[in-house]
Length: 255
Image 1 (cartoon, one colour):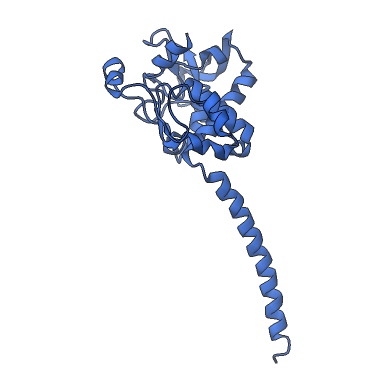
Image 2: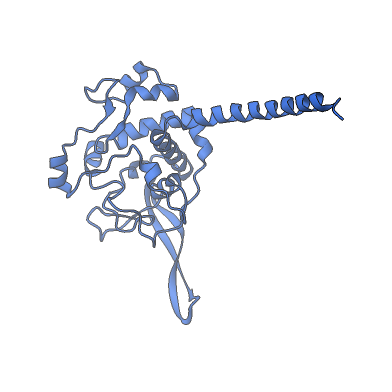
């Protein structure tokens, strides 16, 4: 069953265009999660199991995952399911010609997906991904049986549905603020039609881990740069105090 879902994932996981402007507002992703190595490692596991069969990450090598605390043996045992070597890039076995024939296009590379989805008016790419992966609803009118409120009309089915379960969108009828004679359907949230393997809270945590990994993958040196930046600022602060006192000592006898 999982292999079938992974294959269907090739129907454009994140589409070839940006999310439609009429989609729901983006939730905020806690970017501090990228510094939680356990969370990023779990996200890498989810990525390898649910995304990598159809989506490549061709700008990242498996051995780069040592930066998130994994050993080469752990990478081989838990994240590589093909004959790929640890030093190779995270490619997919899906042939581009087959993808075009079967699905009408090649699933996008996800190496930089968290960086490419940023929208100045709505939020960061991580905000988008965190919202997108939690916004699937059952829609029998679609060929895949799914739609996404963050990306209406998306071609990708809900590959994580076994974890989340099936949810429906809840709407309320309210007066149109621009026309008192009309009513509009206002989105109020989601309700769980059938549970999945995880509780809603656990699923949100899992998605956050996956997004943390996708964000890390787009810029693996990010956490190291932040740590280095902290030390640089501390050094500059200390040096400023030293320079100030040296300046005072130099000029104290000058009239």
